[in-house]
Image (tube, rainbow, N blue to C red; front, side, top):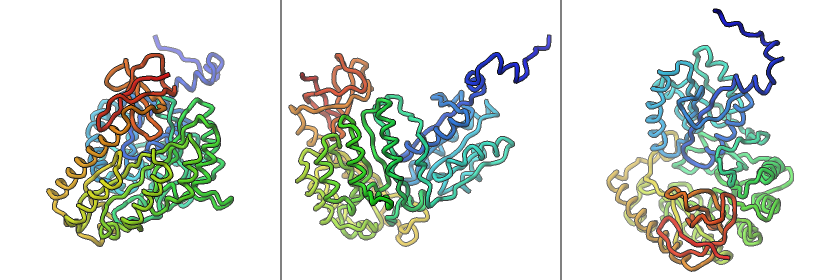
Length: 462
């Protein structure tokens, strides 16, 4: 017997439009690699595609569309994505209708190479072209490739309400600006994300209010260099914006990332000390402790001026934690330069650092002008020494917390045990503790009883 289906008008009589939409919904699986900015971008992409009747899935095997969002800041991120594509090709063999796309900085930087080397990739979209995704998806439906990697001087996605991909509904990222004007000699970001532009503060406040309304307890304001935020129409700079966000709700924790040392002002430090709900944690990338290397990196500050900013932070907020980014083996780095980095690390006493070997990024000033002349074995040895020192500093920092009581925002269950929860202090230190009567999203007062270099352990106190 041949099945008979009602035509669309009859179907609409039988089902609500919501039910019809659900029946025709496609599944989107999105993987994000790299920085917090990429996470925020993935949430923007998810919002755009939600309007095109895509629903998020956590299972790549059931997806109609798989998107990989990654950065090009370091070579290992690109290598990981290429390896991941090899796995996804297998899924495409089983599902001929599956579409695969590369998003973000990697798409911007090597679009031609992706299309040439990866025939399984249908879609290549740069960080300023996400609004074009619906049109590009229509293009690839007939077997063509969809490509848009044009950079914009204006795009901030300010009007888009991101779909939050973190299911804990506790912490959220809010992008306040895009791009970067600093042009550090090793960095590819200005070439893949374009020049700096800030969002209208009113759209940022509206997004924060919406998060508060939906029960979020913490927001992190994001920018390649948040200190450079400036909205000319009403002369709002970053300290003023940070204060406005903090004043929305005194129970809302507010963080920000990332600061550039040359722009971290006394005004910003003053705002942080003024509001208890602005977290006392500052990520201040130094990259090197050597003036010779900093000059070659075009960082536009010296070792001395960096340490002066550290002193200003510690004098105003002795309880604050400070973290950093450090590169080992930049072009022409000498052993003395390396020792300068180690000595600066000791002087600051970082609680945490992101540490990497220098990897040359094509198209940057350094790649064009400076030979990558530090041998790989020396880079590896220097990085190992940096990591070893940072582990020691991290342990010393956390040992100082033993016996102290901290307010911790609970983010979920411990990875090692369902009978324990974990959360973070204002200083961004992870604390694991017994579950008792607490749940995700609660604040808990915890006394620190022990620690490792990575984690604090505590017990609830009344």
